[in-house]
Length: 388
Image (cartoon, rainbow, N blue to C red; front, top):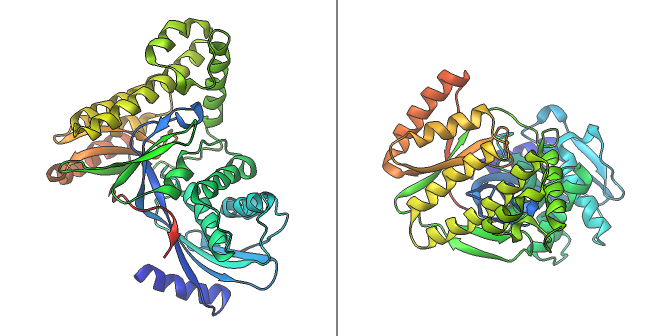
């Protein structure tokens, strides 16, 4: 595997010769169910074959050194395995360092540090969960190297905690769950309220999942993500005055419509409507897929994008342009934004024979309108984070 050979060379150059173990953690794409995870709803993501690789060697002291081949300008980041706190100087390394800290706080302190080299082939800032990929990767490395025997769902929770508490990004559990629990050729229907999940075989009947990157970088921490979350919580509080519910994900569309008027703020009402309707849409979409109705699944993806555009307002001109162009193409069953929004990627279900013309037509029209070109990836659905 050429990538690991190249990584071995860089490892020797940065850290010296050592016996290393190799690990891989995927990115994820969410097929439907966006901004439902922290609203107690369902999501339907899958792990993809693009992701983050690591080479790991143990050290004898209590220090770890991290180096990313993607960000060579940041050099080697050194930190203590005990009591590390977030600092701007760590940059990207705050994500794996946060995992070390959360695992130590949970009683899994490491007796020694590691030299770790990272390399990711996920497009940067594309909303395919590079942060979750690296967090779960670090959790898997520590679990394996230290022989902790923690099950994957617990590792996923610790990785999410690292992002929530250490990094300060109030994300739901979907990204880390999909990255950790991914299974080849399957998507995961996950109830984010209970963490009940099941695998659903992705048989797309002569179609493929095509990820299209807007190539507009985004940062969720500084974006309106946390604001959307607060608006949804305010809407839930208003509904709780008249209904005994713990999350928006518990409501049917009809129950929401009956009680929506108690949410006085019109914006908060729209945020809640998206969360409720998107959750129901996700359940219907999975049911359609399991009945081999890929066409219905695609139509629900389109509806999801419209709701994210109009009710949740997390799309933006680049994502809307990509989705609207996709809807006009022959052989496209459905297309929507995926991830947190504001930039990043769309996910489309495209008939295999139509993929070349889809890419050509969308690229030309998008470039003409936005001023720069998008990128395309045909997704292979992969297993979750693991030692290679």
